[in-house]
Length: 133
Image (cartoon, rainbow, N blue to C red; front, top):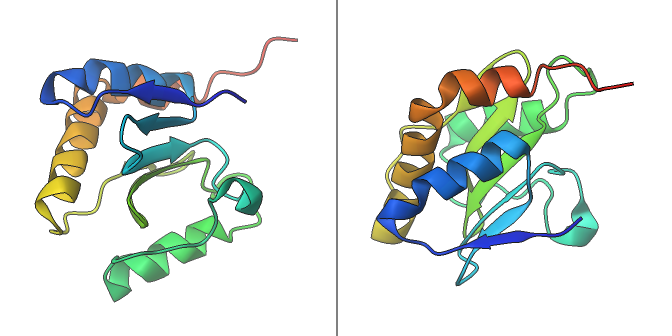
C-alpha cells in the first residue's frame, strides 16, 4: 500500500482528515507524524510501541491493540514520533487522549483533533459502510 505524504502545517488538517476518512497510510513530510490502517504490521515499523503514553492510556491502547475480536480491534493509529496520539476502533470511534507532550507532538495532536472533530460523522460512518461485493 502506498503511503501518502502531507506537509505539517496548520492549514493541512483537511488533507489529514481525508487520509483518516479514506483509511490511508500517511506520514508528514519530515516523518515525525504517521498513521496506518495496519497497526499490527510489525514489518512496516508499526506494532505495540507506546512511546510516552501515560500508564492509564498505555493500558487502554495495548488492550485494544491486542484485542482478538473484530468489534473492539484497533483499525487505525496515528503516531507522533513513537507515541500513539489517536486511534480508531469500530465500537468506540476516535480516541485522542488529552495528554501533553512536546510542542511538536501538541501540534500533531491539534491537527488530529481538528480533523476528527470537524469530520467526526464522516470519519465514523465511512468505516462502518459494508464493502461492495
